[in-house]
Image (cartoon, rainbow over all chains, first blue to last red; front, side, top):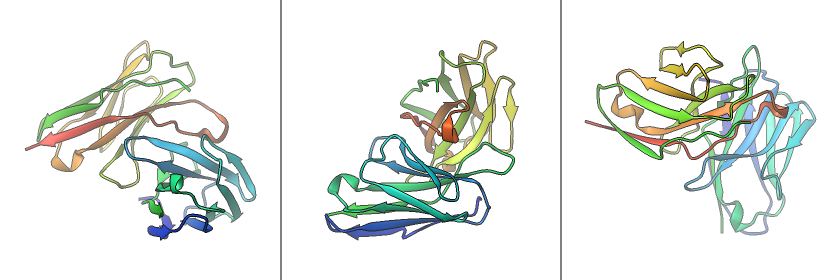
Amino acid sequence: DAGITQSPRHKVTETGTPVTLRCHQTENHRYMYWYRQDPGHGLRLIHYSYGVKDTDKGEVSDGYSVSRSKTEDFLLTLESATSSQTSVYFCAIMGGNTDTQYFGPGTRLTVL
Amino acid sequence: DAKTTQPPSMDCAEGRAANLPCNHSTISGNEYVYWYRQIHSQGPQYIIHGLKNNETNEMASLIITEDRKSSTLILPHATLRDTAVYYCIVRGKNAGNMLTFGGGTRLMVKP
C-alpha cells in the first residue's frame, strides 16, 4: 500500500470553528489531492497540489483552503466549519513513473 | 473527460467470475480507462487501467472493446472480500490529472 496517512481519522466539531485535516505521504510524490465523499455519492475533488506551494481548485473548493509547505504534507483547512461540510475526506497522491492515484484511509468529519 | 455509465448494482456467486461492464461511448483517443473499488468506507483502491489493449494484473483483467466505447472488468474468482463499489473512470491528460467519480456499481458477492 502507498504510504499515505491522514489525521485525525475522526473529528467532531461545532459550526463556526476552524478545522485542519492533514495528509502525510512517505512516497515523495509530486501530486496530492483532497476529495470529499457524501452518502450515495462518488468522490468529488476539493483542491489539489502539483508541488510545494503550488495548488489549484477542484470541483467543490468553496469554503476550503489548502497549503503545502513541504512535499510530504498537504493540509486542508475549513476556516469556519458548516454542517454542509460534514463528510468523509480522502487524500490521494500521484507521482513517480505512474499516473495512478493512491488514496489514504479517510477522515470522517462531523460538524454539529 | 468522457462520462461513464455503469449498472448501479450486481450480484455474483462466490468463486465465480464477476464481470462488471462500463460504457464510455464518448471516450477520445488519449483517454485511459481506470478502475477503482471502495470497500465499505475505506479509501478507494486502484485495480487496473488501460488505453486500448486488454490488461491483466494480480487483481483483475480489463477488456476494452476495439472501438473503445465500452469495457469490462473481470474478477476471475470472486470472494466475499470483493464485495465493494466499483468505479469505472475515464481520464485524459487534464490539468492536475484529476479523477471524476460517478456512482459506480455495487457488487455483492454471495456465498
